[in-house]
Image (tube, rainbow, N blue to C red; front, side, top):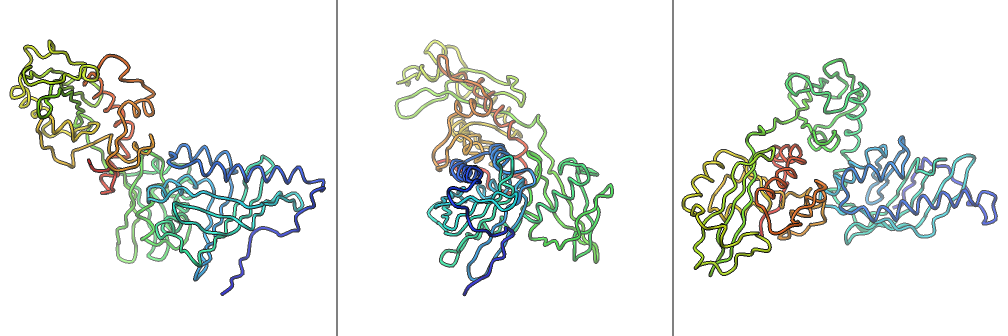
Length: 440
């Protein structure tokens, strides 16, 4: 079956090589080629990096068109300024950022419009690839004004998870338009105990928000509402739900309440090697602000120690003389942890060291939290980022440069890293999202 695709771009015969417009054509080709090359380097990019990428290559009012040709034709279009949300949502859906390969693209001008066409492209994502064509309109500032991709999906369907993300783009943009039109950020639109109520009839979302905000009168599928958190300003991703009132319904946008800061405590343990295992030799605990809660050595019978691990632990035999025994210190540790949300780096090791079973819902582990792992390029289960690498990336702080580790300082670094992502972490947990890996 053949399909006729009506492109928003005018068509023209490419210019000859000696055309007076050849230099302009080269400018367009350079923009599109650099865009394609840079796209392949955006694996594991953060939302901030995607925003910089899109600002560099797209005009602020740019447009993106995607046409998928398979058993039927699917078309999608949305402004390029929400592409960062699009790419981040793809990544969080488990899809790799695509590689775009162009074969013999051609640049030419029609009137004052600079265009680039490529009738042979290849789009790769993981071990999947699609052929197709590309057309781009280039602005005078050498950025992409409009980009159209047409992909052949007759032999390989586009992933369902990617289609789901694409289908959410339009309602996401409608919500963004509605809130922005009223001069508010999405998070700033919250009203009445952290709720904004959007009232409309059962057929459209053409209602009003508190304060008179008018929504576009467009059909609004409730199934497209729940995953919209990537629309909203980080780190406040409000949730959206619907409450029916007779023939009307309310769209309710809420920001889940966060645990009190006083509920958090971070711990870190240092161990020494014994004959058949290892033993707790020092523990540090801090509160949410980094204030010291506990810093104590723990006595270990020197006859049982085979390695003090002094280079990494900083512990010498003399440090443990006169220290409380494990049996003496553990009740105090457990009393300090009772009812708390415990933050740690590879926390499962620390809890094992103190022989403590803590409610799993009160774990916050910076070594397992997916966004932090991706930030330093750690993707495989069973592999953990070092605290040193996270501290450098997130806090801009160098740790572990001196002699041995100080568990109180490590607990402070861990708490500071957690606090940098606390809102996203807690809100994701409230939605029962899978936010972290599991210990190997």
